[in-house]
Image (cartoon, rainbow, N blue to C red; front, side, top):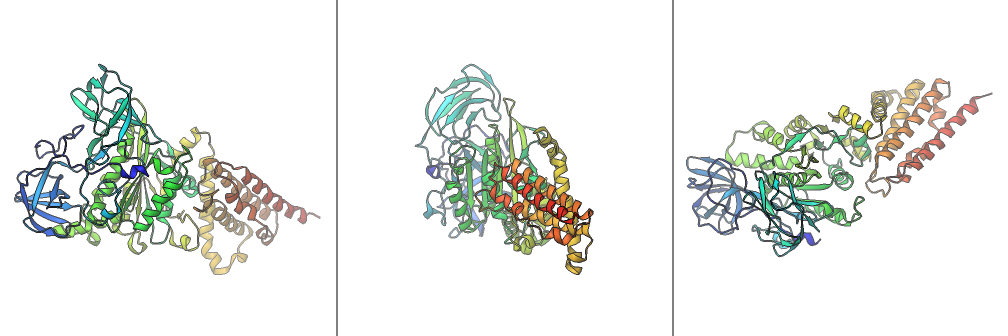
Length: 612
């Protein structure tokens, strides 16, 4: 992809001296320049570096360490010594090495080069494979030779507020890329560029004395301001087990806990491929390199069903693999949310997929242990819950300046050691998310994918989303879901009894309940990521499959009440119903109705055989 060479590097620009208290970020930082060293390295312990004197330093400031100018952030200041969290491998860095203070927090360059790009944890382009394993200097000028077509929409002399649209950049991806008045700026449009090809750092407009460029900087840890509104729209993931049983609203949060081998990564990749979001930000936080390579390759090959182009063209991949510096994992999730908020302000629906937050928490634990922080449960820092809450809190639906809406949805995988769902990261995450999609080891080992546990998962927005489905033309969604959940719950209650005495010892109605639960699992909830027809399921196909299974299950129960031998019902060929999910296309539910009718005819024949 050409956009792999694009620039979205960690900001190395140095602005004028600022106070220790944070101030609003400027619309564009001055051109980068090298400052004379004003501090020295005092101590190095892995990613923890102490520097002194710290008189000119401020919390969260970006610093550069040693001759390689390794980036780091100041996380604590005490007794004239500043503690720095280094984001590169610190081998070779020794006490006495020079330290440069940037005077501004770690920021991301946000511009038209983001979509289709692959970046590291500091949002630097991964265009050179030889640089992946060694120190990678920040490249603020990368991609500056590329020019973008700017089309103005605002007029000179008009009064505009923060978030107002000044112009659009064409050729930056399949979604409209708007140039907006930056947060904190407002006033008269004193200058607006004409329709022309502009460099990434070119001034597109001047608003109230503030220059607005195509590429802007924003501190990754600072949420972008905006007016939050209620989340009341369904995010269709294309996965029936999620969309039917545990739906997620756009602008909310979900967690995907599961042990090793339960299919977390595959499920998240399916959501990235098939959800109806405008922009996907996929954060591989400590992920294995081969898995990230597969993600990038598949996104580059898949056709986007919405645009007809490549799916990668509306995706931003942040790849901080397990062989990259650990502390860059900690920043990668914030960089991902920062990118999503950037597109949110344009009125787009962005989804951040973080795989996984457990490895992010492990980076926090390692740094806390080196800094001497008081450990809490299982060695994690005492502020783990606060860090998780601050991360998930950046999701939301926000109103744009033109009256539209944009959203950020955050979906985080959790990889508990040994599959222990009571460990701290999983337990704390559950407190702050609206959905939990728990992956069950037994289902995964039985080759039931996606292995979403219907007894261990939840959605806190069922009432709101039921109303959204009704408003969208499906008033039966809530009743359909309730009946499916009831079938699964009853079948689960009978499972232990079946294991003990066998299904033949159960009454007829209970045997039909067990049969109904099996049909729900095999004909409805199972979904193959490798199937051309069934990798994604539209709302219409999901509804058709659910209604078909419920109709067949109801007919089986009626036969049991009529006195038909349950064994004869169980011997009926339900294969057409089970195979319907693979035969029906994602947008073509017609074969499902045909399969339902075939099975119902077979069941009707049992009554005819019972008649004298």
